Amino acid sequence: MYQYQKNVMVRFIVHDTDAKEVPDFYTYYKSAVAGGTNIYPAYELVNKIVLQEQLARDNNIYVFQGTDGDDWDATGEKAISEIEIMMNYVNRLGITVAKNTWSGLDNETVVERYIEASGILKEKPKPTTNTAWNVHGKQTCL
Image 1 (cartoon, rainbow, N blue to C red):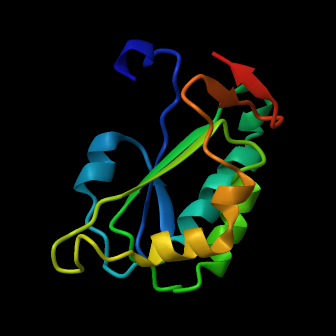
Image 2 (spheres, rainbow, N blue to C red; image 1 turned 90 degrees about the vertical axis):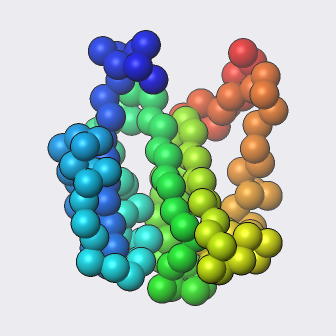
């Protein structure tokens, strides 16, 4: 990313029970959140920012999330709803689950469970390494 930093606008969102945008990586990294996890507000804020600022009109949108896989909403109904909105404009959506030893490295997390149960991975299959999906859902060979 650093080689393209003058061409890339990076935005950071932190969340616990609520979500807010912070100005830079340092603030993001050093933020002390109150505890508890509700992922839905972060996805909702991403959608609000992209839609209100009409970012998808002239930009490629890449959304990446890092999580421990915990979410108070065990069904993920609201989170999945926001992901489905996001899938209409993102070029890539990446969710990284960093598992921890106290919840079991082999155990499926809440986030993994509800994403799998939603069927969204089957509806929007992962492209092959030589393929990308553009905003309009058309396949582009690389």
